[in-house]
Image (cartoon, rainbow, N blue to C red):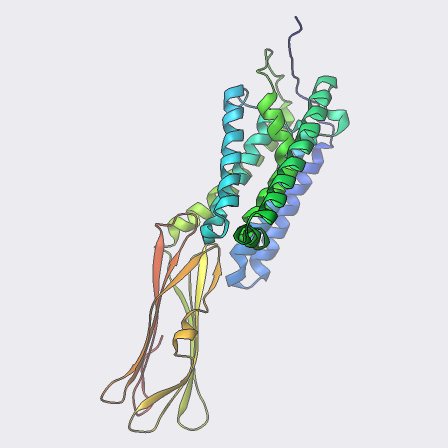
Amino acid sequence: MTSTTTRLTRYRRPDFLVGAVLALYAVIIATLTFALPGRWQAYKVYLVFVAVTILAVRLVPVEPGSLLRRRVARRTLVGVIVGVCLLMVVVGSGLGYYLWLGILCLVFCDVLLGRATQRIATAPDDHVDEWQESLRNRAHRTAYWVIAASFVVLFFSTYVATEQTRAWLFQGRGGGLWIVSAELLFCLPAMVIAWGQSDPVSEFLSPPRHLAWLRRATVAMVSASLLAPVLASLALPVLPITTQSSVRPSQGRCLNFRATETVGILVEAQLPLAALACWNGRRAVEMYGMNRSDCVQADTQLATTETIACRRMVSTTGTLRFVYTARVGSPFLPFMARVVTLRVTLTRTGRVLQFP
């Protein structure tokens, strides 16, 4: 009886390459930090960080840990990925902003999947032995037929079934269908390997010492990429609100009001106000910018907004009052939210009592 053995493939890329990538990341982050406007800074830095993290994960070799080496753990991981994919396909647009949670879960599971399979499915030919190459070839053939059958059954049956299923297919269920399609195209061979690979009977070789710090740095980058939106969501209710406002006179007895209130970092939202109000000595009136349609123009980055109040009224003394209140929430932690309010109070004589 022949026992199945696995080995840690030799790291053949130049060691300085990963270090150069990390140095490039530091330069890019520093440039973005000092050169970009504040409201776009955190979001773009995070995107660059995620891109560099993905590249670092691809460059640094890994071997599965004690838990991921077990077949039951690998099959459980594959089951979680399949469950998330089914949820995103069936519910789709019903997830709304919470589609990010599904994407984040898939990214996390894909990282674990690559670690569990040593990324055999995408490794270069000179980085695998004969047994690994045979396993990879079988996995790609199986994945090809699974993808072909899934697409044929899904698209054909959905198109010919009913009018509602055709509408569901054309709409793509809010992007969930396309995300799942990309997941299957790129990760299904690794899922097949994780499902079918037997438990190893020999210990993995110890990694070279000079790669230890690179692996620790990569693990730290992956952890930071996954935790950053969660930490930003937790900080959303306590971070100070940044306000930028200006009041400028217009033609006649009128004033231009401009204001922006920003809350959050990375998971952030901006509530803008651009309005014109005039007065004639008897009452102040709104010319534009203080209507219900003006209270749905929030600019968000990885955040959700919900309008709570949008009221405009003129009191018996002729004072104009406008209130715009919105709840800013996080799609990653739905129970974390912050209420932001913009106010305008203008008297009949043109005196600004409150703004913003």
